[in-house]
Amino acid sequence: MSATSSASRNVPFIDLSPMHGPLKAAIVDDLTRLVDTGAFINGPEVAQFETDFAAYCSTTHCVGVASGLDALRLALLAGGIEPGDEVILPANTFAATIEAVVQARATPVLVDASVTDYNIDVDAATDAVSERTRFILPVHLYGQLADMRRLQAVCKASGIGLIEDACQAHGAMRDGLRAGAGGLAAAFSFYPAKNLGAFGDAGALVTNDSAFAARVRALREHGQLEKYRHEFEGYTARLDTVQAVVLLHKLPLLDSWNEARRAARAFYDEALEGVGDLIPPPTAPRSLPVWHLYVTRTHHRDALGDFLAARSISTGRHYPEPIHLSSAFSHLGYSEGTFPVSEALASELISLPIFPGITEQQMTLVAEGIRDFFEHG
Ligand SMILES: *Cc1c(COP(=O)(O)O)cnc(C)c1O
Image (cartoon, rainbow, N blue to C red):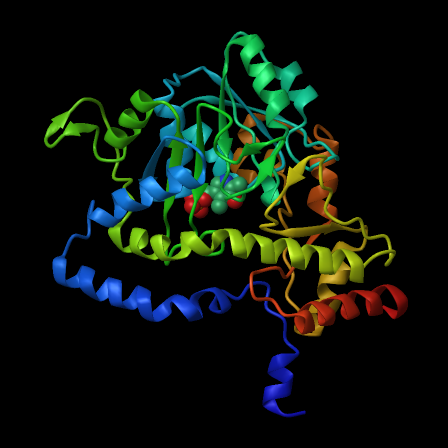
């Protein structure tokens, strides 16, 4: 077999080059201009991107920050969180969600995921509300919104706030609500592999509350409301101009990229229908996900992943260890068996390659590999 044909049989988990290829020359031009102007911090592109991304999310304000974790942490701080306040979040999430809560000196209260969307179980979240609950922090995992309409009702009835972890859901919708527009604030990550990715770490927070946005603006820049007047203790958590330049080029294409992810999802669903014990990713009613990940469920997850790896097909596991059983958060005292849905997902989900520009040939190789595993593996 020639080197070229063996390379073409290898399916990466993610390939950013189909997105970046057509944009590269224009981005490099703008970056060259930025080197000349030297406006690396708070350059005009930062404000321009904030305006555009707020409009994209149907919110009135966007504040660019340095990462998704910064967006979550600054949202909690700007929301007035105090030590001892409780924040309810799902056990099935990426570590950054709980890191933000702990770093804001609040107390995380984990609840299980729902099998209907793998997101926070709203009944469990409702039961977890106490006198000390300050926020519910749902995560729109894998690109699908949590049940925001029900969460809004729960928060309103109990007088608590709603902050969204929308780091995997840029552009997703559910029940007519857009990711980022359903609570006090929402956090986005522009880590390169996210649906909208920068050329490094970057993030943003969106909100409809102008006083809240002003507090976040101060927090991201050493607590300054104006230069060298420090209102409170802040951080170095700005969005770089370099990243804003990149994001401005990419944002206009985000909807078409999300559409390509939905088409890839449909392709896999059809190609894998009835294969083995696979359960495709669930879609809630009236939901328009953006499939950051295609997570399929099987009791043979690890063997399947190894089988595909032997054919140079990369897969992922999101996430192999539920938060409550990780060493980092063992001090919270949760034991195995506490969140059965999250624990089952952690051992059964396998993520298939999905990205804008993935070819039918690549997806066919993945699907054939999976069929072979279940038929002869
Ligand atoms: C990526 C991600 C984050 C944090 O993003 P960073 O930019 O890496 O800090 C937070 N929550 C979820 C669910 C994510 O996927």
